Length: 461
Image (cartoon, rainbow, N blue to C red; front, side):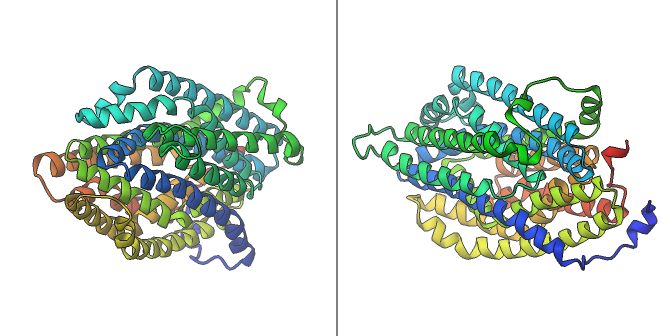
């Protein structure tokens, strides 16, 4: 086994062409799926934005709450995919099946909790984000319908990611394509009342999302029912117990990503609360900026997923030197992708902002935040690929949990509060203060990557 000193001397460039083919076949479907998912959200924003800034702001803040559940599912996915990828790499199908079973139990339990809270307390949830009565009223309409979405979206999202660890990379694309088409169609007819449907406005956007998520669920689990035997997993494997071995390993390695992503999304929601108490123009600007950022950086999301899966497979096989070299190469790819994404965001921002019915104040706030995001994209991409991909795939989940806790809650939240609600700085500087963590995490994660101590093979523990 290589020592940490040996790992530090490993080169930066992976020479094996098969590695780049693997990135292509894993990252591209994820990137394409991400673009479609963001396209769905972007079209939601555009269609709802035509109804005015109040409705747009309500939709944005309601989705910030929904993002709590979405990121929690990504945390469940991240924690279980780390284990699944390493077990798949080691050829341990029994433990892999147990991991998938645990993931479905966690996603279903969290869906029930969020559904009940959303159905019973929509106005109170919205009042956390804003004091504007009009925004609260419209947001509550959206959340009541959204309460039925959680189970279908969460379970299908996590299962598609788990399937990628078993080298089933193509399923996410048809799932997202069907979801995109259905969402656009039902948004159009339900928001505006077309083709004989009632005009539901913001509630129509939520119902269109629900229909598309049910379709995702049916396709994903329909595939598993018909083709699951090829990877050694059937629907009946979802029933049964969990071994002490798995629960112990999940506690040591798989639980930290859930805690980490939960802390991250709570921090993000705290930042949305800060922006929500500034002005409607700033809320609208944030919604447009984040949607544009996600669309323009879809490749980075694909690289995140590819990094976690490919590094997890190498670590599971016991190939530490290969994992270190590929980790460094993936870091360089993330920097290049971040630079390209930043340029793209700035280039398309005038066109994107022009598609909305915004006041002059909202246009100015949005353009300022677009500029800030474009300048921060290199750091955003680099820390994202390292923390959610490379280091997580290597099993270094506890370290990443503490990094998220420190930087979001000791930098972003206090400085964002001061910049937005005390100092009254322009939106550009408020947005920068809200994203300080990406700069510091980039350098911390790079130090960790170069040190070589991030590689932990769960099959040998």
